[in-house]
Length: 361
Image (cartoon, rainbow, N blue to C red; front, side, top):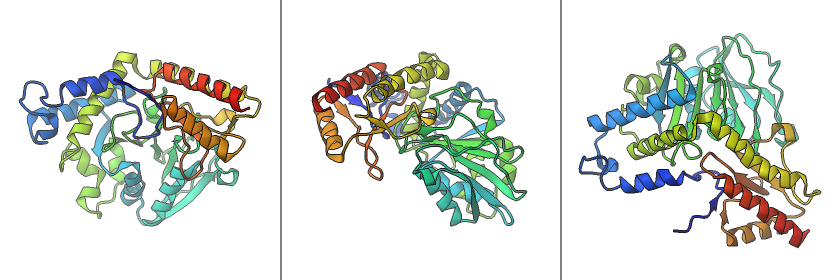
């Protein structure tokens, strides 16, 4: 078996031991005579798998039973529409903090549903830094405040979160959930597409404080109501059973690693290996984001010209790396060092970057 250094932004690297366990159980799950992909979502086996996965996630996050876990489809992009559909009522407005492309997409989607306004934005700086969120002012008509905690495309990450008082704070944590210790109780709701730190693509996780349900609209279709998923424990209709199973394996792996705190230490080490090369390159590599706002999940940089960047990507692929080209909307280079990316992969990338500069600087 030949495993390359996978820095793809999502779908992204999965822990090898998780893949190996899933491989062993692919044809027969447990002793039930069939694959989990073949099982009815109404079976006791799947109901138990579903509930245990939800409880394990709350345990790892350090959250009590007042928070509920919802397994949904459609990716984080679907949540961009579901949130305003559920929470923007007549006379209310969604408030948005814009820090990158996906947070802007969430804001634009909300405008199709109801009133939405921008609280803070760093678009004028081409998303090169994060907007200040310390002293934002909320109107009495605020339904919620929405923010993206880590910007996948640009490579920035919030370390400070706004105090929104009684107004619910909602976070898109797709790119950094489980990667660092946070006080998750600051958020009334947060959500994440699975394909970065939680498992394979096809599953979206929303974690919601139960009292937020009181703010949900009751005039929208049943399938779009968050309350429907809570009431039916995410089994109202057929869920992506295999993706939930894979998430269970990933969460068990997280526990074996020592939980979020230990993964955070590892993630800091991994990111610093690459940032050190960027910062010591004398301008050959140039970071995209201001240093204090850099992400440990998505490391972004540019080079002297586009042709050199293309050569870097081509040579990296010949040397056992994948996923280092920046997002098509911005170009440049990006290494997504999610939880499952080993330290050794980041060491290898740092060494390759140093060697590339020696040969091309």
